[in-house]
Length: 89
Image (tube, rainbow, N blue to C red):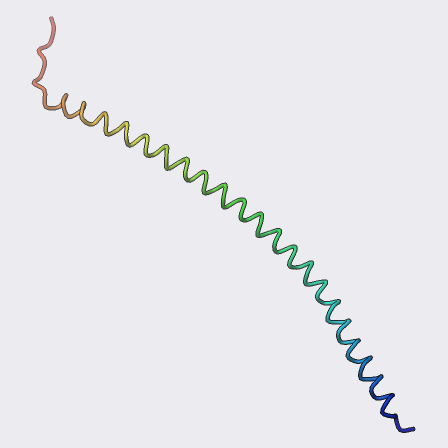
């Protein structure tokens, strides 16, 4: 039996529908994978933001310590250049 033109068109349409259905089914699994990846990226972003905040706090503490050292440096130089004191007694 030789397929008619209508049967060939129907078969072609069913083939295209089957390929499309398989493609959509695979897209659903990709959606799950993308959701998992996005979730992991969000977690990493949160960790990076926390690390950046910690680094900023450490930087501020270091700057404050440097300011205190600068303030003490003048006093140390003053004491080093002052004439020696006479011992008591």
